[in-house]
Length: 391
Ligand SMILES: *Cc1c(COP(=O)(O)O)cnc(C)c1O
Image 1 (spheres, rainbow, N blue to C red):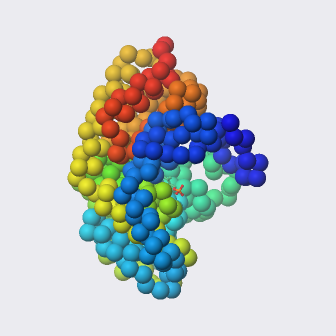
Image 2: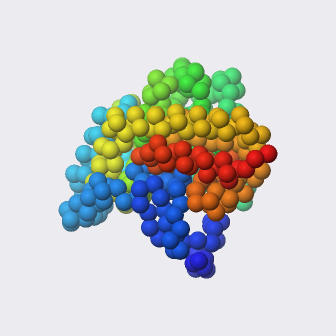
């Protein structure tokens, strides 16, 4: 067993094991033990490990002999990727960055830029929802509803507040004069896998439109096919003004993006935002491949079909086991509320060769690769049932 590296800053609580290899939907540790992976690098490894197409795309991107140029110069892969994203979404323009938190920070800036043009400096407030997670940077931390992440870093960025997940509360909070944007995850991931109802999203869309406030959808975890449609919000038949994406978008390479409507884009001027690495030719080439794969109707159908199997298995587990309080989710994004501390279940699953993660103190979160086969879904559910144990 590998010893923990003492040179790494101690921000992560890691089990004393070292992962050395992945294949398909499994990870292998230094002792050769296999783990069925229902974490997928926190919804990043949608294509699993060692996917031949992804590997080829990475090799081709290296062989193209242009890794990085900075945004001082045009390069083709990023321009093509932006075009493809525009074709496949509500958006008209795209900005590339390097992570989810960075995408949301940028989205806040774009929203403020747009709002200032509409209503002057008073119109700047960003509102997020109870249970929301939008990142751990200074701006996004203020929009993230996790007291233990926030408390040590006060004062948090101003002009960002959290509202209850209630349309009437939002109606009271959203003011045309002072609110720039509302940011929502269609399915709250870190906050316990809470599916925001389609009706709520539609009401929120109507409310923000009525008040001339932007709707930002954070699809960093739930986007890119995770729910069985390319974008989670498609299922509520709404369109945002801004959407942020990241986690799976470049097959494990760090990348994020901000997608905006033409209306938002008109407010943005050269110099308003920027990044050294964002949208470089190497990472964009790989992301082009990932977008093609995760847009395939057959892949999305697989997510929906496996998701239904998982739903049935989890519902059955809940009905027969009082240690499971609730089951929530959609597609291949699921949360189970358990009576004991989630971390104990995560540790027992781990011993049994199953990787799951938590989303809060009493919620187990499941985010398997989107290419998972039926047998592995069933196997994962069985191992999870053993890890949770009987009442
Ligand atoms: C992971 C996540 C983020 C933050 O992304 P990082 O790449 O870790 O900065 C933001 N929003 C949501 C919904 C996420 O799941």
